[in-house]
Length: 143
Image 1: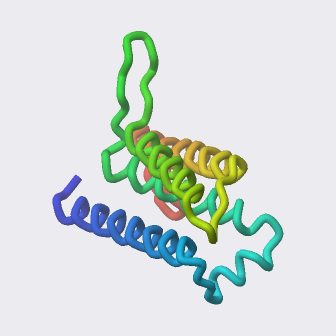
Image 2: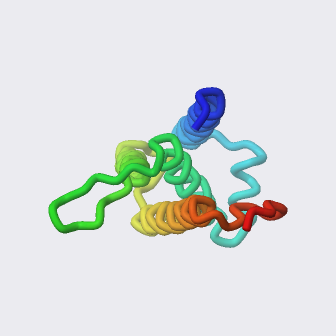
């Protein structure tokens, strides 16, 4: 991968992580704004938010770490980026126990895990398809 492209990927991942930190801090302080109002008006909006935002974090981390896996003896391997994203999600959810404006929720963790799994599978499928020479995105004519 060209170094300029890698720099853009890392910059995007950093910006994405920074946006998530802002969301967590605002929510942790009990803050409300239009974004949080939207989440409360959509059925299961909080769970959808966890699925999409943390799933996206897992994908961004996987891309930033070049789809690397931890290998253990006979295991196929554990994707490093998504594993780190899940640990971050777990720590964030556990931190809510100490905050009077927040509450720990196992269903949020399940939405995080499902989002990470779905986004990771999609990202790896697209990269595998591109490596096999098939079209990686609409309009790509490679055969």
